[in-house]
Amino acid sequence: MISPFSWHSTPAEERRALPCDSLLPAATVRAHRAVTVAAPRAIVFRWLCQLRTAPYSYDLLDNLGRRSPRTLTPGLDELERGQRFMGSFTLDSFERDRHLTLAADRVAVTYAVDDTIDEQGRTATRLLVRVSARVPAARVLGPVLALGDLLMMRKQLLVLKGLAERTPRPASPWA
Image (cartoon, rainbow, N blue to C red):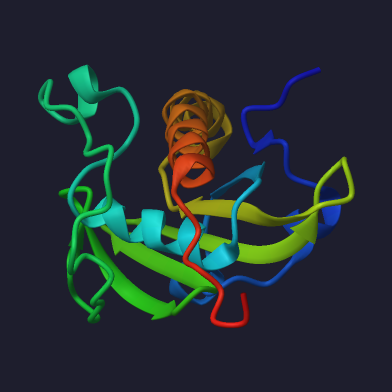
């Protein structure tokens, strides 16, 4: 059975402490989404910085029909607390190439990136997202909100995965 609270995340990832936990310790809804990306962690993190300018989900619905940029925008990786992300979120905290934590009214989200090994035994990046929220009538509204988030977040993660995987790798100084 598919759960609106979990998409491709592991039980260990769901138990892991993330920065958004301290922003909403009394969250009534917690959802996890994850994807493995065949790109270095720094590139995946750089694409997360693009969330400052666009949501990378269904552009017609959540970006007023404007297409989210398909190339990296210079300067968006120059992060400071309080910057706007996706219109309604602010950057609460970050650790370069590790996580972005965003906050809005009664919602906190952490995008975490970690090194991993993919199914073919290659080095890859694991992108884990936790959405924490405080909502009234969580037993009734929680699954509905989590399902809506799943539809949007799944699209966002798959778009970012595809863009990161197509991004040229920087030349190695040892090559």
